Length: 242
Ligand SMILES: C[S@@+](CC[C@H](N)C(=O)[O-])C[C@H]1O[C@@H](n2cnc3c(N)ncnc32)[C@H](O)[C@@H]1O
Image (cartoon, rainbow, N blue to C red; front, side, top):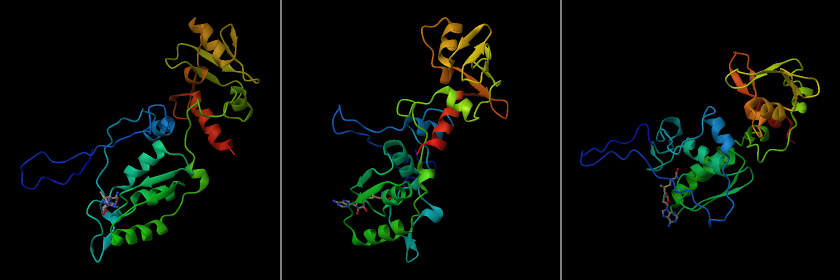
């Protein structure tokens, strides 16, 4: 959705205020990339919705040639940023067959992705080449994003305790603060008379067959808000991944 669409000057139809993205894979069985966790983080810990509100390209970002717009439909970098962050990994090759001013290439370069662009107008090719040459790639550590637990390397809760992310003696809680447990030096937790791993204690106190302790248990952040201990695991992974 465009937050500032061009008006329909003649007043003859609805203002075009959105564009449709096609998200496709080669076949139903193809593996595709969807960086769910990175999208959720980008969206302040809420699942990223399929409708994106982004302003059309303007201001400093809008490329000019001899004082006028270099291209009539230059896309906003924020749009490509989100697309590439959602659907590609660093080092992937991104193909844009309608390259225009090379927004895709510029953002790909910044995010450590490779790119291929096709453009039939030589003047747009020149604009794109200049622009991409000026796009500064981000430092490798800045490109890393939050990972889904599925794809993240295994981390034991004890590693967080060992590394000082949660000190022994720290209290952790379920989301509604119905239960409180104390973290022990070996990475086990004690809740009332029940002790064991974050998962085992979580399932025992709820009388549930299993429990994902990473999302069940929360710690009190500096501002007092409860945050899942999984956030600490993500921070640990970002800090320690080679
Ligand atoms: C909507 S614009 C792309 C704008 C681009 N995303 C940007 O941010 O600048 C589409 C571009 O595709 C180019 N184009 C259209 N048909 C083409 C073709 N058959 N081969 C190569 N380029 C083509 C046009 O010249 C135009 O620059």
